[in-house]
Image (cartoon, rainbow, N blue to C red; front, side):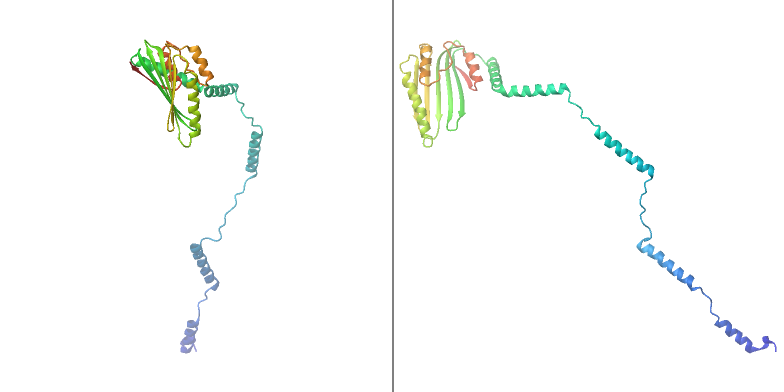
Length: 265
């Protein structure tokens, strides 16, 4: 019988056809899955397979670097400091000599400046030829405050009388012993010049202040005798002379640090 006319054969054939399972390559599927996982892994966590490649220096570069180091070392070994020129040495020596001279002669320079200032002041102020020149100076010691006042009487710009006052101020209790020495010295000078003409010395103490007043009348005193008496008594005789120019006296007092002022009289 013809198989095509047999319904059973057709049915069997249909069953065989329906039971056929497609042959799928599992290895390919696994590979695809793994590749997706790898891709995802790279996307999420970065490419773990990438590594930093070390820099490889060529032989030529290495030789050039060594040659450069050797050259730098040779340059350092051959370095010779630039010697200081003689001009600089001379300049330094002159500078130090100048500074030493400036410090050494500073008091003389100050006196010179004060003297010039006094000359300029005299030129810029009206000249008083007869009157009184009053000069004052203050200083401080470890114990006392001392004020010096010089009153120069002059006529026609010539000195004729000097009143010199020294005020010594201290503590009447704490400095009592030192004040006693000052007043004792003043009294001694007063006694020794009391017989000299043209000189008068007075001593006064009020609390912690001692005032010594010396009056020299140049019209009547004998300068040589008075000078010797002052030295013997331990005093210092003023370096002024009869008829000395009052302008010169004022400049000298300014140079010594005094502040002076003239008044007509």
